[in-house]
Length: 119
Image: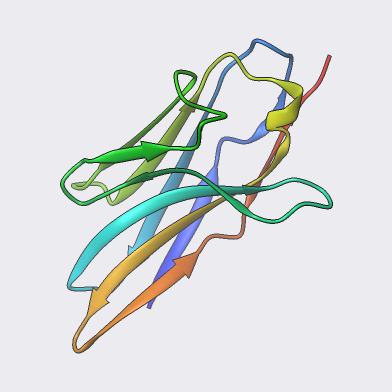
């Protein structure tokens, strides 16, 4: 099993910045891809950014150039640096990871952290 704990959300003014963190704990053989998703009120959950174990990244078009995903494999921690935040970035942000266990792969979700962009 893998536990994911997000932190770093909060209220920020438009144009501001936040840094989200997601710490993974538990037991696994390897952590494969990790990603950040978000779900705004009344909308479906969507991928924000993802990063492979090798460091390759991809971003939603809406956040390209503003958000940066990174991971510290030694600390089992995923980050999302969010700059130039807009009101439309307001959502609950979830961390997701795919972990390799003995004989199977499972996907795990964190509990979510609220990001509110408002003046």
